[in-house]
Image (cartoon, rainbow, N blue to C red; front, top):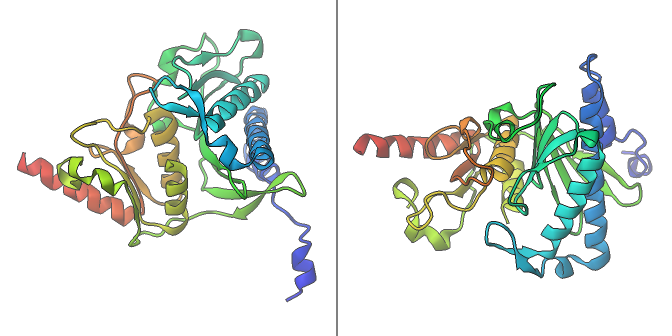
Length: 303
């Protein structure tokens, strides 16, 4: 092996190059989607730089306020929300933005408006039909109509995971280049593994069949197993938000060959009725989720 050549690889697949390669498959493309993604990537780089400069410990402290969910806001949440809203509006390609930090959907002013609807920070993207004013009805769509989804993880290294509907790819930020480089091409989740992620401390409150989401789902995506956030007696609709947590992660999991199930139906078939709606979720390796579905089917027969 030529180690010297390996150290200085010249044929790097950056996230920009990857997106442009995908765009070239659609001759009718106007490039709007590529421009939008470039602004999302810019937002991720900005936050990653802030984390590295200030230190993650200083940015995971509380900001002294609560968001519209009644949850105490962390400094990183507030910073990320501000950065991404500004980056996405300035792209000129979005028309509606939805975030857990804001009570209402943000409708972009007409002069800066585009064709895409986006949920952040675990992001999901929908394409809005040309013509007419965007409305709240455009927001409340099933996840199966998404055109892309992804997330960014911050820490000692910055990881960006993306699917545009043809597989899932992982990129790691190279600080020396200032570019996200593809490090995990075409991620495929194993069909079955003996790994699970769940808050067992709440087990006594889980519903009948089952008696820091990004990190858990990222591990599940790479190594297989199952991520569980079941309903419980205290909170039948639990904590995870449908539009900007359940849908994007379910989209990614299906694109990687796994499944996502709410306890009642395929997660991406759920039709939300409000922008901050919540849902239970089971997602991960195909066969592991099949076992969960079988448990719920058996419980339903008893009823």
